[in-house]
Length: 507
Image (cartoon, rainbow, N blue to C red; front, side):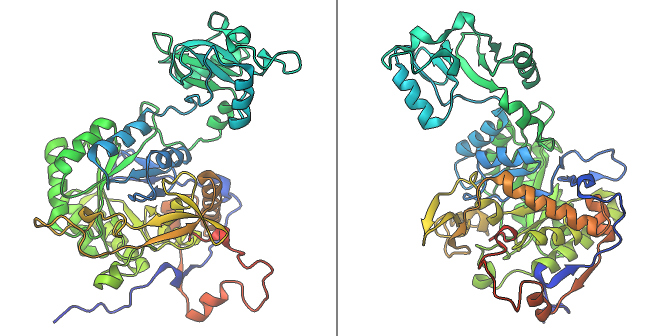
């Protein structure tokens, strides 16, 4: 007969943390959120890849493109570029992240020498920029001929018909730097010469980028940036168990730091075959995550197959209807607790620590704290990041409120059949396991993630922990009744604001 688990599977909302002693030295500013991304051996000095914050963005078309990857890497997390696109397009996204140089801006306000002061004024009103390079063709990468700043003209004393070439600062009077200049050197040149901006040019004097004085403080304010050995932003990429022999080499060549098999259910021979192929052709040089699983057996299967990290969760995502459609899945809290226990047992047996990632089931910011306390090394989020400016989906007005479009990879819109592949020759999505929806627009990523991380650090301090491993060791968790869940929110009052917890909700 079928096997029955003794306990019901539970979600994060059924648990609360019980605070421990908070020492005077335990303050949010002192908390470290560093956490391992990939496996390492006991006694190894450091993990080969470490996240500076325990958050990665989901392998979803509506969430993770190159813009999201740059924004999240700036804050210390990592994006996994979605794999539901052509190999060439995904590799190009990865390459754009790796080629992006923080502080090196491609100019979007450019002039040609035959344009007029009226054009300068119009461009400034449109874009708000007062510094405008002048190139031979008026493009962002044309041959540099000069530059126009607010010091080069006075509207009260000049005709609007005057040509740019007649009042610009010419090239021979400008200080520029070569294309191989580092950001540190560029900033030194700016400060030494009291410049507001520094054009970067190639060997043929074509404009490559511009470094601005104002961006120096911005760069200094992001100490958690996820950078590789060459000071480039780090980025992950999603793969499937069908075309990995072509996709993985293209992504590796583009510079992907880690890949992850994107599948709704990872306890399968298909995932082992994919990992085997990567190990055969790249050894341990290519880091590969696998999943998703919801129990100890699934974890051990993928760990023994050689996965660098394992994702946990089936059916808990806000746009996922796998449980409703197929009756497959498990409550996310229960899944994380069991898999974390299996990871620790595997570590004791083998000396190999395989990080786990909680993927799905996170509704509120505090659920991230619970997932980590229960043993997750980091969390993967879709809806959370889909709300931000940096996500690739459209911003639309719905019933007078700005929303962002958000759809599941198993929806008819995405038709990502590879993610739900069970072998055979059929290459189509027979039935849906995801929905097409909206999420409330929340603005820039940085503003929101700062609040989320402060909540996490504050919670850790309430439990007397300054690191994630210490948090997991000291955490005390209690189940809560349905009545106490209601009591946990505002109750028995008439609210002045009908949406008081918007900042707390990851809807």
